[in-house]
Amino acid sequence: MSLRQASATRIAVLASGTGSNLQAILDAVRNGSLKAIPALVLSDVSNAKALDRARAAGVRTAVVAPRDYEGRAAWTEALSCVLQEAGIDLVVLAGFMRIVGARLIEDFCGRMLNIHPSLLPAYRGLDTYRKVLAAGDAWHGTSVHFVTEELDAGPVIAQARIAIRDREDECALRQRVQAAEHWLYPLVIGWYAAGRLDMREAAVWLDGKRLDQPLVFPESGPG
Ligand code: GAR
Image (cartoon, rainbow, N blue to C red; front, side):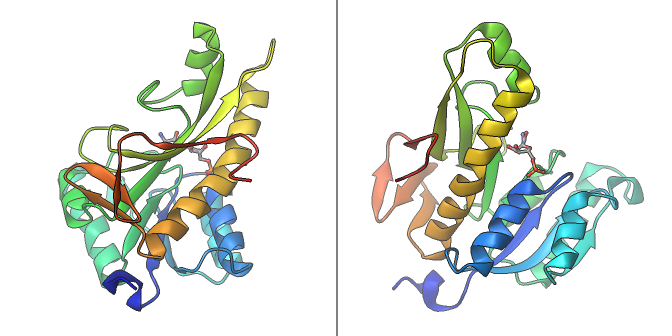
């Protein structure tokens, strides 16, 4: 048993919007498939639906709105303080649509995950569905990665790959990608919580082995 596993991992989920990934994480905790403590749900917007989902599950919430701070550095410092005061072990970005400052990434280096709707390194940034369809690609998907300073560029842990259907539109593709996110993210968070997953030497380590490529799963899940 690793030291990290000796006490249950306290996670904070940061979300700006609907929070369907947050819901999947809360459901996985509730049904026992994810052994972690959802200690905090934090948003940058006070009316995020994610906050309602957290309250309904009895999880503590916080809002740290950028407009209440002078600049990104001050806002980021406030975020970091809230997370540290809550004794958070792992920060989980789940549709958190703000770029956080370097301070938070340093404070939680190797302890911050993000989910991004593309097969990274393809299509970093916004509008991945529009871009992948416009490019006529055969595949899209989602990636869970460690967060580093460069946007959507940290080491990728795992991906779900989705074959784009003939004449599929953005809405249909988003639904399929998000359905995959809902099993992929709890799975990866569970690896971290079990002490199996680390970031070292700017690489992903799983079960003591360095991953040279992300683990790639089909749309239907790990099976
Ligand atoms: C998710 O699909 C996630 O991949 C994406 O936002 C969505 C949030 O949905 N994240 C990004 O685009 C980050 N670059 P949710 O609020 O229903 O979980």
